[in-house]
Length: 406
Image (cartoon, rainbow, N blue to C red):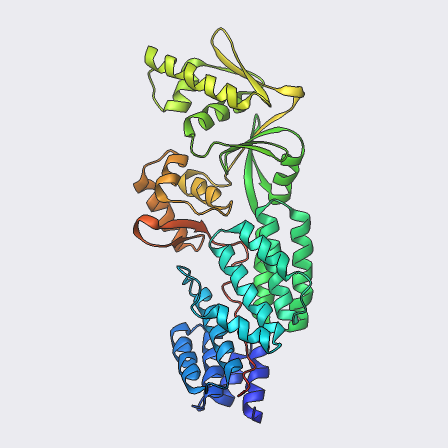
């Protein structure tokens, strides 16, 4: 590398895109084009960045496999930044094999982090966890250490494990300070703020009380029977009963849990479960059937006993009963709470779980997407919706900067 290319690469490694451009803005040789592409990507000009990198790949000769592989890696990160997630980046696996064969372990780790961040954006949390475990202990430069710790914090927060999340953020901040990349520090700041934001509302006799993530975690670990209106589940410790696709049963357990330790009359339960004002004998017959189904599902944890006027919930082992709801009211809050578990949801499944029309859910999703809180993946019938990761991965482009000619 000549001195200008080396200086531009050093500037990019610290996130100084403008400083890099002052050195290579007029260069048309392949290394110069590649560095210009990386600089433009860091400045948010992703379309131009892709074109410059593609020109650089065409310009590098067949023997310059390392440089071509690094350009492919940079293109993959740009695809991630613009949320082009429909399919894995073309040629990335072959590029990683070339980098590994030539001992470029830092950029191999970088490629694994791109894969992890893509999995997080797709809501495939268990796959991301497995990929992150494979990366654990690998030697990496400080910027990549920070990004790996951010991914670990994201996974811990979505799993309601706040202590590991805070430890990962502390590690990320220390590494980001060593890397001296302002956008990376800003990403960590945003994630730490998200950790302190209200995650749920506790519904009690004295009204609603907002809970941060660590308070929700403590509630789940308390041994209480928790009716979780955020993910439409019933929880006792690590055991869960998923009712997201059985909205009538969830409405019944929620109404009974709010009334606990008292009971509810049949008309009130019919109104909560079936959303009607005037009940008749057919509704009362259906209520008995649905209560029987719910009683069978809850049998290990609780009992639903009949009373002269209705039904009452009794938790086994004298456990407390708690009800939590999304931190904000309305369909937007309910949809966002469902998406926050990391799974990819279809519009029809969200409508069924929320108990609203598909058109209402579509409007809520459009509002959340405009606010950057949800994102669609795929098109038409295969379209699915996921929440934007807590660690947004929106400003952090750590594209490979060193592009030697051979």
